[in-house]
Image 1: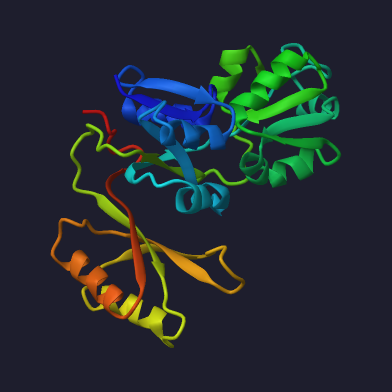
Image 2: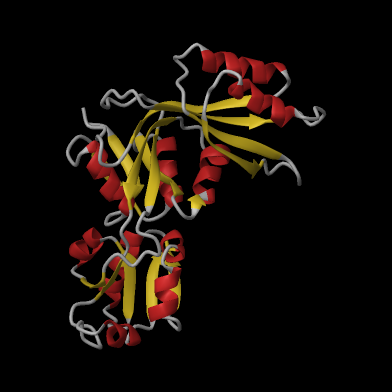
Length: 294
């Protein structure tokens, strides 16, 4: 059985993987830190990693993108989108009771959660918990575990309901994210092509580094896609980390390398002196329409 590393247990990453890939089709290996998730697949301990890479409102998870680009050479094999509902969890029977939200929140002095999750709940935190101490941790599941193990009634976690069930916490407030249309995009990375359901929706991700002595190079890159009517769903500049002012472009393309037009577009880009790195050509799955299970 193939092994998949991910942040967990009790995380949105774990929930999404179980939803799309199934609980029993793979052997899931949980890690507390995203670096360990990546390294486990690099070192052959696992066959794949599941990485949260983009959120509806926070945009790209820069740390994870940088890991994909600078630290590892693991192709993207699939992607899926999963809804994120964030919940305020605490020890059962905590201070302030559970009937009045304001009274219960007034008893909380510290909240643990992943940094991205904290950023998605700013309005709720300002309204109900303006003076609380916020402690970023490696994952939302880790936040729930810490609240359980600390045994402090003044501590709480922002995490999935599944984490509350796993660690015996009660839900003080559900769906506290600032925006209800909150989705996260996850990618499955690894060297081998996994056995997943066939889908007509495919995407290709590339990195493009422009030649330094070619004015208008970015315009020509975009033109190579435009005149072929190839849609770019995302283009983002990121520093190459080689010198100040040097950038690469991370581009998601709504096309497959199996088509005639896309390989020709990449050849045209390379012909003007650009460096092109293929990050993956893979199926993409949308929530509510299909899963990746065979």
